[in-house]
Length: 264
Ligand SMILES: Nc1ncnc2c1ncn2[C@@H]1O[C@H](COP(=O)(O)OP(=O)(O)OP(=O)(O)O)[C@@H](O)[C@H]1O
Image (cartoon, rainbow, N blue to C red):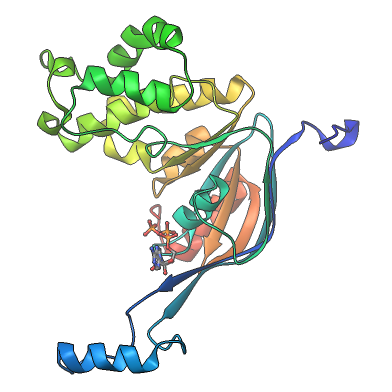
C-alpha cells in the first residue's frame, strides 16, 4: 500500500462496506413442544434451513486505520464491537464487503490462549511462542512480563497453575503476555476493565508505548475515561452501524449525550 504525502501514514487496516451475519442453528420456533416433536420437526424441515436464525451484527461498516493510530470502539451492549474486532483479527468471516490488513493482527487474549492447568510460567512461554516470539526473545522478556503482570506481588504465583489465580490476575497476565510483543495491529477487547485501578494505569501507559512503536491499536471499552486517555480516534457502533468516526473528544461528547451520562 503506497504512502502519499497528503494522506499521512500508511493504512494498516481497511474495512470496506462490511456486513457480518451470525447463523444460529437449532434456534427454530420449537418453544412449547416436546424434544421428540421438535427433533422430528427439524428433520422434516432439513434443507429448508428453517431452524436457522440469523443475527445481522455488523452493517455496512467502512473505515481506514493508519500506522500509529489508537482507535477506540464504543457503543452500547450488543452493538457489534467485539464482532467487528474478531473479523479484523481474521477470526470471523464477513458476509459482504472486504477487510484488508497490512501485517499480522493480534487479538489480545485469543492469540495468547492460556491454559488453566499449566503454571503462569509455562503460559508465558507458550503464549509467547503462539504469538510468534522466539525462545530467546521470550527468555529476554520473561522477567518484564511477570513484573508487569504483578501476579507475583502477593506471593510466588507464577509457579502455580493458572486455575489458582483470581480472574483479575489471569487477565493481567494475559494482557502482559499479549503486549510483550510489538504488534502490527493490536486488538484489545475490554482488557483494561478487568484489572484494578493501578493496573489500568499501567496498561494504558503500555498501550501508548505499543502505539509509539508504530503499530495500530484498537481498544473496545465501556470505560470512556480509558478511551479518552488512550485513543485519539473513536468509532461508535450502534445496532451494527457505524454511527460516528472522528476525534475522541467529539465522538465521546455525542455518545455521552446519547447514553445520558458519563458511562457507556
Ligand atoms: N456467536 C454468536 N452467535 C449469534 N449472535 C451473536 C454471537 N455473538 C454475538 N452475537 C450477536 O451479535 C450482536 C453484536 O454482538 P457483539 O458481542 O459484537 O456486541 P458488543 O458491542 O461487543 O457488545 P458488548 O458491549 O455487550 O460486549 C448482538 O446482537 C449479539 O447478540
